[in-house]
Image (cartoon, rainbow, N blue to C red; front, side, top):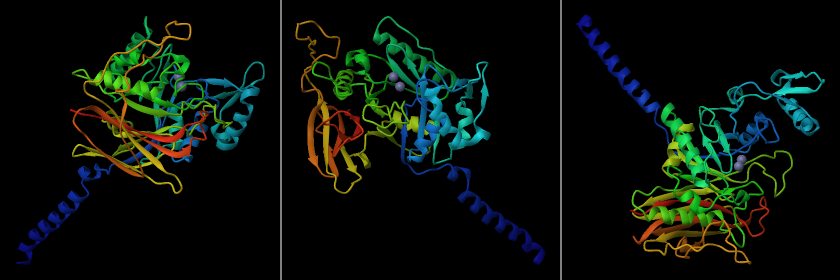
Length: 422
Ligand SMILES: [Zn+2]
Ligand SMILES: [Zn+2]
């Protein structure tokens, strides 16, 4: 009897073991809770015209509770061998770098003139210092820079500026180049159009017809990009509504989501006009801190932009968009639902200056585009679709002035992505 029990005991142990294995199986280990990840997609370093080393930049963001950072230098990936001369201008940055990372890490040599040269570390070498699963991620990116600027995120290969006869053509050619690399490599990538009002380069009309352009910077924290527009020219948020209204009025329409970025260049002197880190970011709801997961969530519009307002939750259920703000004591919030209804007047009028000359800028449109559909005070607000809207988005404006901005009447805000009404 004892002998005959042995096999059944073995079977029992086997069963228990399989139950245990099922509980800890790779399928379960592969599951993850969705959570919010804070990141910046637009950053410069010494690899182009930023004023610090990539390690110092990555350290700044990691120490300031960011989860992901894309280094996006102009027409360059941080790859390969590159030496930089340490001139008087970089001396202080070099000393701080050496003090922080030590002589074992920092590589220097003298050139023929006896000048100190320092090797700029490629992203592949920097990763080991900062990356931690579920805590901090570095993403390879490039700011494709010509008459228009676009960020290619999670690129594998450098994309040279693609050129074109007109601004829409330049935009289209560069978007196509990112999408082609994504197709060729099978690696998820993302492209966003940058700072439309930098040197008043882009209009809403330039962007509206660009196929595959699904992201643009509604807020860029560089001090000279004119997010807010001026007396003749539309601000970037106005452009967003014009693009959304015009696109979504068509069948087969493509969405336009907005990002907010630092476009950081200046890491030493913090002042309102400087392109400092920590001014504008996105917060993405994804199950994992990987480029694939972040890009997947962004493509689904599951993220928001911020210049200081933190959201507790954004939900769209039963035709109702609910926005919940994470309260900071002493601060009040205005929550605004903005949208364009079907049947809006699509006519645009060209802008002319005081002498009657046409200005190359976004046309003036009816206030039916980007109308305020509802507004309330507090930390939670809901908007239930009436059904006649093309899209609805939300903006939260806090009572706290944005001290990091040089724009006098700017308040810390958050922008929630549009819900397209079917
Ligand atoms: Zn730029
Ligand atoms: Zn830039």
